[in-house]
Image (cartoon, rainbow over all chains, first blue to last red; front, side):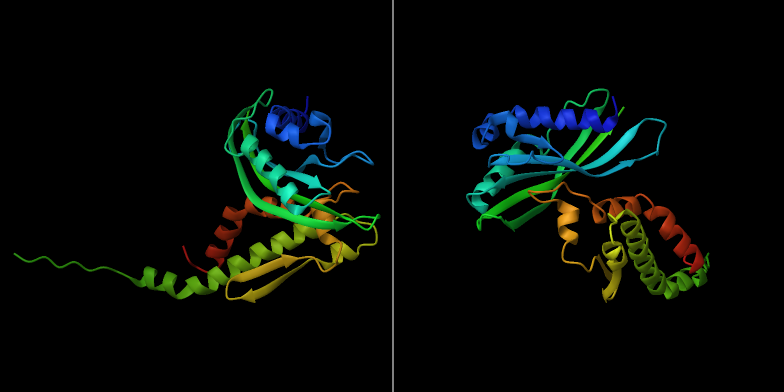
Length: 138
Length: 113
């Protein structure tokens, strides 16, 4: 399996294991999406995607330095999106993730990001999330 | 019994003299490397986003690399309706992995070694 696939599986597993996060989402673990939510996904939900990936090539070992963007979307308020972001952070920041075939030796939250989008129905959609640096070594 | 010690500071003085220019060139070069990668990685439909990416000096040893279209942030971060197509973040990461070689070249060229 490719490195990107096993990283995605590890991120999903870490998020899905969080009871507090699951309880905030519209459909529990079904509200956690890789890359993009399905059309007409019910709010609130979480999306994670690969923002950048670097193969270090500093040693013969397969070391990767990835940036994963994990964010929550809410149609209620920015505060609700922020609460999802906080729950995600509790599950990811500083934790050792299970990445098949790799050892995760560094996981850290870096830049926080938030946006507001105008929806076709006249309402708003709030996003709050952060970039997480994930360093792994095979 | 006395002992004379002479310290030749010519090399040190040369490095101190050339350091500000080297630092300036190093920061500028790094900014333009990021600009180059971001232009290359920008999603392409009309070319407007890629063409709008610029490295601009904001002050002494400070450069901003940014795009000049209003939808750049949506490409970088995605939206509720579309997946992200990041170009600035990966550009910074690529440049970061080359920082040592960029700065070594600048310091050698500026005679700060």
